[in-house]
Length: 85
Image (cartoon, rainbow, N blue to C red):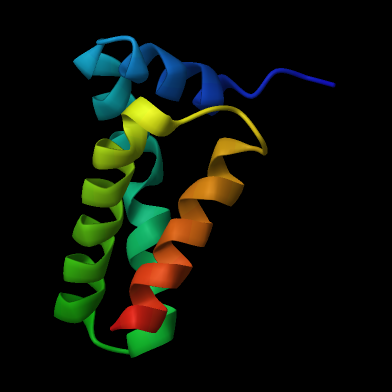
């Protein structure tokens, strides 16, 4: 199985590297915003939902372990945030 570079970045962030989180955020912010927009149909709400998604990712870092691809985990969080909205 090929190593997921995003999962490696999340593990680096978990170990205290704030630049790794910035890299993940920059890579995925537009995709998460678009995903949230498809749920709600409102650009401002989508941006708020995406922000909440990344806050949850940030807070979950101490508990993070590689179980699936990082994108799978990220978009599961985004889905839950959108459904809760």
